[in-house]
Length: 183
Image (cartoon, rainbow, N blue to C red; front, top):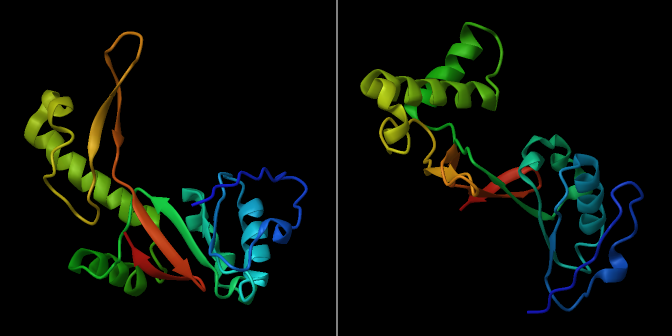
């Protein structure tokens, strides 16, 4: 496997075709949080997808890019990570979706599901553990939609607890704006 590092200017998008090889699958990793840069890069790769087979790996913020459903991105596989994944096919998700549809005449955003999950899980743990919540925050109890792997992160200088972090990430693969696979 050959790796080639190409730095592209986020403010002045340059043509990427000069870096592509038509005989191999091109895997591009975009380490930019700038959604416009991501859309521009994806559009360029999708435009040459017949000649240059490509896979684009982006940032978690790309989950919010709705433009990936447009025809300009047709055929391009895009992979990004997210700490939350909810297929919305379980009983609780369907109840929340129907409640929003029938009572509030709207559609719940992902933040509704994240908020519900956080409040349910950590509320239950807080009621159960009280002041000892820190010692059990990583327990797998009270799962709602997402598998989490919450681990303590230590301060390197003092070796004391700095914060907790979810180490579980889902890899989401989108093609033509539709989720095709989750790893």
